[in-house]
Length: 202
Image 1 (cartoon, rainbow, N blue to C red):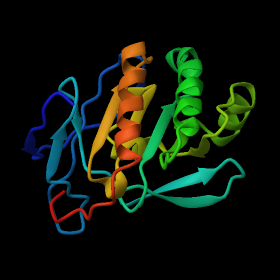
Image 2: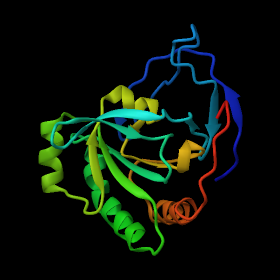
Image 3: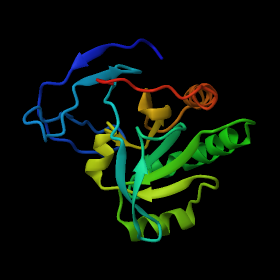
């Protein structure tokens, strides 16, 4: 991590997840009590803004069943592999993800759970993962707004969530060797760290 800074979110903006190096403008409503107010943003790497994650995320299983995935409510670290089946950069990154997942799962004492999150339709996702499986990783389908709630700006994105959502780490685009080493270092730390309660405002 190259420094952490806390800032306030005060703007409202449109959010679009794009393939590769497309841009995203991301904001949250700060209005009535029932609005999805997120007051803090953590700056994690390369100057990217990452917001505290939602406690639970609505998803579809590959069997088409609605399920809520614990994110900030999870007691163990999660590694999200976020893709779009039409994204060429995602296709080019699948081998990196396969290697990464196999390395993480092979480590003794590992508690990190790798999960593929697809922003594509269920049928397309099932066909894609039949052709390009990542063994050892779970898979869910999410709406694009749900990916945005995880501060995803483009695909592919690799997103590490520490226990109880106390910290997020994000790697965007096709992974380099340095990125893979960084993620493995993150997983070794997050997967062996004790669970800490997240206080108000995180």
